[in-house]
Length: 106
Length: 112
Image 1 (cartoon, chains in turn orange, red):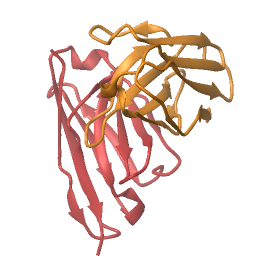
Image 2: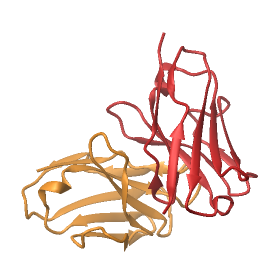
Image 3: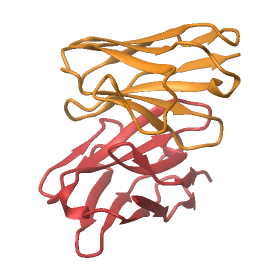
Image 4: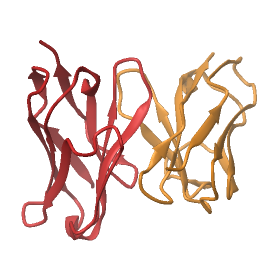
């Protein structure tokens, strides 16, 4: 199974900060990666798919990049409502695998 | 609009069984692979099982292989997860997912 190593596991930042979260795959997964945001008590919400495609309605301060084994989620200017846990998910092949999550505190 | 509605969760004793269902609408169900994902209390997300659109391909996480069975009824636009030999560590919220769309989840608690 492909392992997804996500870092950091948590971070604390201030409003307006630029935040970067990374996921590294144990083998190449092309760009078959999504980024999810999960607020407490809620289902995860897909922010970005195909590594860099922002879903409709997602604020433009979110962006994704990468291909192959290394991927990045960037929040360009952190807002209070971005306080959440973020996960990457590879859907290159089965079994699908999530990263361990990054808890973002503001 | 894609809608996914899970049901079937509840409290069950260790060793027991449950069948989860996911009623889908808003898209051509038979054309899409579906998955089940779970999250234990205070833990991260774990993909559990997936199935192809036709149902002829099924996939499982090692943690549930041999105990859980995924299936679908394309005539009813419904996804299922039969869970047998349940363990305390299967306690979690379970969601069915389709390409980034998630239901509201159904809670499974395994306890004596």
